Length: 427
Image 1 (cartoon, rainbow, N blue to C red):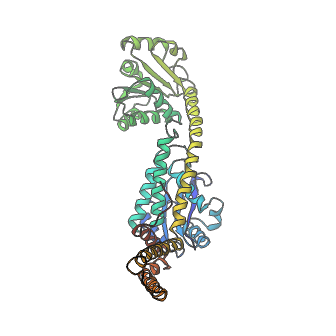
Image 2: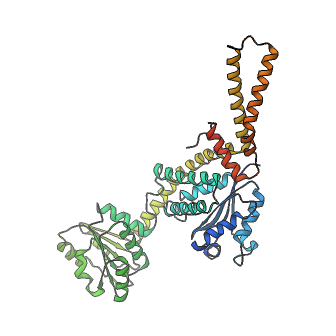
Image 3: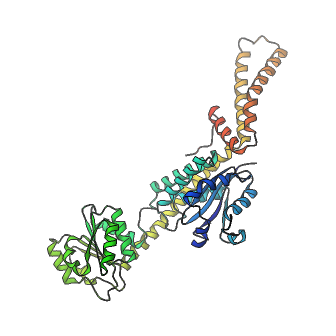
């Protein structure tokens, strides 16, 4: 029976967070869970992927139906979920679909936000843990490493991850367009709204030099400033500090404008008219929209940022179509390798190669120094050389035919390398 790759589990597309969190494997439980996974008789290799968006078991098996049943029971373990409760949220991928799914996950085409890079690092960590426990063998080793190279190829050849697709990340993208660099810039946070706080964190991640935090509750300003390694100021004093800021993010509950055109004109003069980037994330708006009429002022409100994010999502969607084409190419490539890994074609190829060598050498010998031999003598030599080849091949072929599928996969790969048996092209 040929080896099959399976993925059984739940993800953000079909399972709500309350289901995913009940199935998750915490860091302290993962190694034992991998050992428990390998104790399941149909499972020959296994990797557990457990993130906030998915809990999936990737397995290699020669008993697909039995493995699916065992993996469903494994996920519904203990008191967590009954199998029937799990069923409506479960996703099962088999064969090529499983390989395709893993490649799409690695390339972040199956993420909540297409193109976000975190999942690739998580996959590498989960594979590494499985390898250290010994649950990942030849097949999953090749499959996961192939998924890593596919993700790299997609990032190199497409723009699927090149554009910001959240409002907060769009704000940072615009800041990077306006300023050549952020390392010498300062941001001011007016208010402590969730989106403005997230935008500030994005700015920090992009290297902004410092953050000033002004909030009506000064204790909250102190708390945020501590998180941002920034400077807290009382809200009523923020106008005195405005000239120090290159980026100002507004997110207060104020009913009117906290930043007026007149005040910004004063700030511009104090800054010698250096550019000022204003991000108004409040509804109702915190910044007077006529501010945008001033020179060297770049004002964006929540709708502007949403438009940028949507444009980028649309562009990511177009790039994702290119990425899907790459996925199909790479699935074909991996599938050729997996098909060739089965013992039968390897045994056939090994026998054919040894027989070709035997016949070639025998013909050369009989055509020269032994050309006077009679037909009967030639038949005797033919039988003797065939017997020698069969005896030499007996032990290698016995190992290739063994029933331990995980070790068989190792021997098949080793035989192809040692005897230089050509594999299908696989980038």
